[in-house]
Length: 138
Image (cartoon, rainbow, N blue to C red; front, side, top):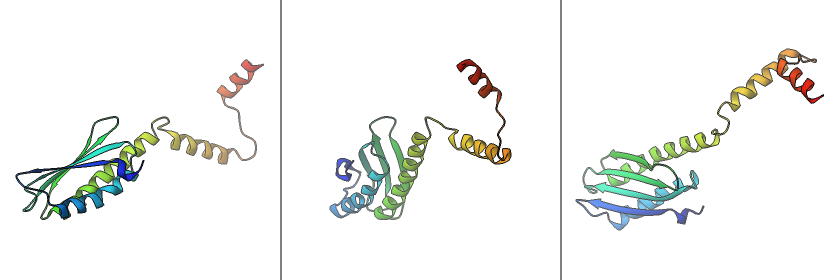
């Protein structure tokens, strides 16, 4: 998905979000598109954007609940930087969960098989399941 496909909406509560603030936020938020091709839009909600802002990022996805990161900082730019990092962690974690969804114990199974192979040396013993499968095939 192209980075332009993610829509970024700005909402200011009790204050206006300037063009400069919006440009900084867009620059930082475009890097989130590489973590999830499922992102539809990101809402930036700022309360008192100019003085001690409380900023909330809401990342809406094609499926599932939106991801939310919220914090208060000394400046709008510093708060956006912090929240983008927080949202990036959430997206990375969610992507890893999706990747391991079909076979959650894949790493453990591979490690067990490797240790079994290394213990057996040259000739491996057949397990009960393998013997049963062979007899059923015949």
